[in-house]
Image (tube, rainbow, N blue to C red; front, side, top):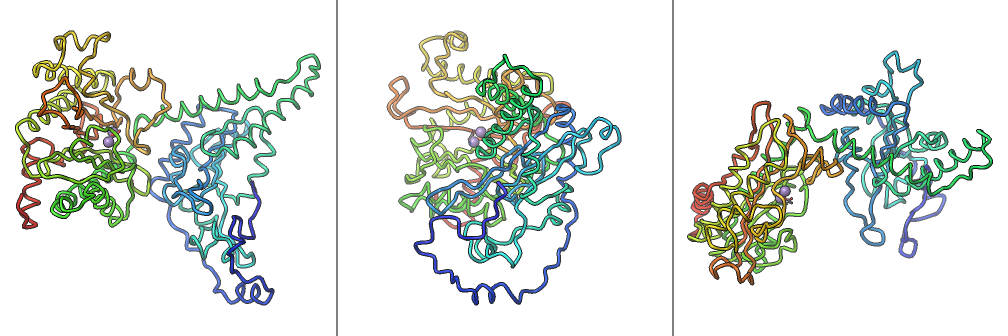
Length: 531
Ligand code: GLY
Ligand code: MN
Ligand code: MN
């Protein structure tokens, strides 16, 4: 784990031109200015992360908790996917897009006598000492900085020092080599976020299994043979419990998270504005959908951000494909274009917003009727949101409208009342997805929460989720009139539960048919294009 890589680590020796002579090494390693660390003030999120660690600490007394950021994932031979730290790591450290690959947060339980007086290091985890381990900046005395394309400063940029990260995150920081001592101490009371770093998890599993055998030997229980499989299973179950608890802890957002969500949504609104302003170029392009994706992503990058998931730019019948991300079709005047996109900030908080736009500036009568039915479903669902209701009631309310509308249009073989019965559900032919999911650090946030806390859970102020009903009439669906075929509509907003009700955080992005038409037309007029 702690091996320091001093030579090019991956298969580039067949084309490496790095000089290896002693005189070169001596020359490149000398005459560099002294580095002076300017220590930043703690970032805003640090105090919130400390409070989150304290809540986790209280739930796991006496347990050593290992929370890896994860490592770079290979894309192809010596190129990697962009790094993204594990969500839980980011939540508990406040380290987002500037996280170091391979970093590990450890909450080390403190002895009972120590925990009575507030532990000084690892602020915010009274029953634990929190410490961050990462590969700190390499010195000029190693060849890493110029010879290692994977981690070298000349190749991917400088890493921060321990002191910089400790100040920035208000956390004790250690070099990655010190993690060896933590691994040495691993015993049966150690839990790890397993999916974040499979290699480290395997090491921890091996240590736990060895520790269990040792404990059995010491207890002199020669007749009970240790079974690695059962030892491992228990570990997996407890670690799964840790992941579940963290998902459930994250269901209610703190003030920092809600602030980040507002910023992500405002940045997303700017991306939608840019798309409609560029409709003339988009409709002229043979792969207009790809240009839509490019315009949105370009605005995100220009504003210094990223996207939280692959942008869905689905024009015409592609809108009936729920996760259409190939985005290689044209954007044809007269069609609807469904754009599902969200900006992700440095903190990793992301928006998730869908608008279905009339490419020519106005909806046809059928398009408008379908669009407004979806909006009615969304509005009805939003109207019931307040603390105390169950999450699943939001979906049920939206589906009540979808069933009523599709029945009114003569699409269902049964009445709307019959359709909504659990044993029927014919209206779901036209909307097979759910209406809502939690949103935050992940687009599908808190995914490991139990059903009783999620779908069957009770809403609390501070929860953030989407409301995103839709209607999708496949091009070959014989149950619908020909004029409906190939129309797909989704309207997706990001909702905050407030103490008295709900706030639609994305309400400023036009969403009624009239408002969307005015928005698209105004953008067209501004750019001197005829619709
Ligand atoms: N963007 C994926 C979703 O709406 O869930
Ligand atoms: Mn969504
Ligand atoms: Mn979406």
